[in-house]
Image (tube, rainbow, N blue to C red; front, side, top):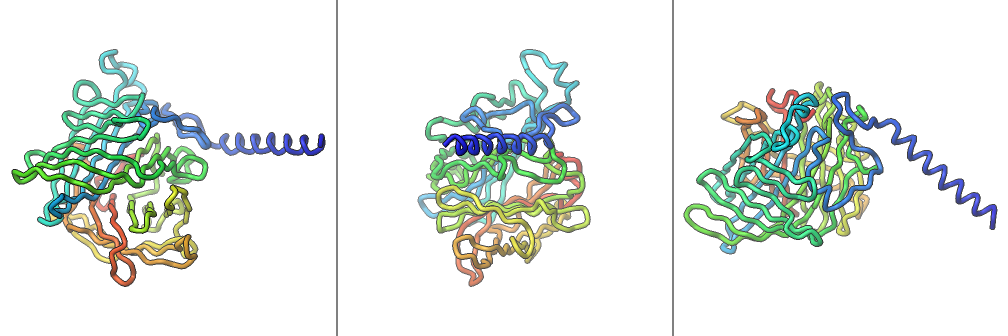
Length: 382
């Protein structure tokens, strides 16, 4: 009995030592002095749904697919970005404003039946016009807001309008457990040990609410996806952009996949596809013939920026349920879903998509993001 206890104690100590050795390769701070997400760090909720000003970059990202009670279909996007100022700028802040933080918020609406796409954006320093709580999810940028209305259920209220085109009020309730991506609790985006994030996601939220558009008020219902990423160096220096998608399959599973594009055009080894099963468990697959493949099927060229976006893509991956390769195609519901960053200077395509199988049958919905197809991304999110 004593030998067995000593053996178990040895295993425990050995695992702790190994864990600490693995963590030792990740610095606690960047050279700029911002915190770096640490492997195996237990996150605390609801606090970690809130803001983390000691990290350089953070965003709360919401996309979804909605239908009115009369059958009218919409897609929507709401993204609150927080960018921290330099250490020197933070030291000069007054108590009334706190640390120097810049908020860049973008909202978009795709009116699928009418074939219209609307977006709006704001850019402000923290203070009267922009705010993020450090205690829970509570964001405000002008009249736009995203707030956790009930912490036990993690329900969220979202309000925004797009100029004089539409006003939207939504209530979101998670129907699956939240997911924290990364086998060690951090999501790697490159070989630099600081190129990682805490990546918190609700892969499926039930949505209800209303929209005022074209002089009408319509009741809405649907599903949404929410990401919250916390980082101080999101990308490595040799990356020129990314293709990213969040897919909600009709069978109750989800897929997150992203292709990180290097300067020479090849995919980074940190490109990844993640299956999320019905219970919220994750299975990771790397890019390549033994994991997943990403093909660009057709393009849409922006008349505004000239960027040529691959808006129809096919993803091939091994389905964990069957062990067989499966083909999934994403096609945009509306071709023109480009956000041109007049305020934050970044242009990208972000759009609602249908998901079909090899036979062309509907199997789900997705949002697809395509960034770095012009020069506007240079230096962003690093």
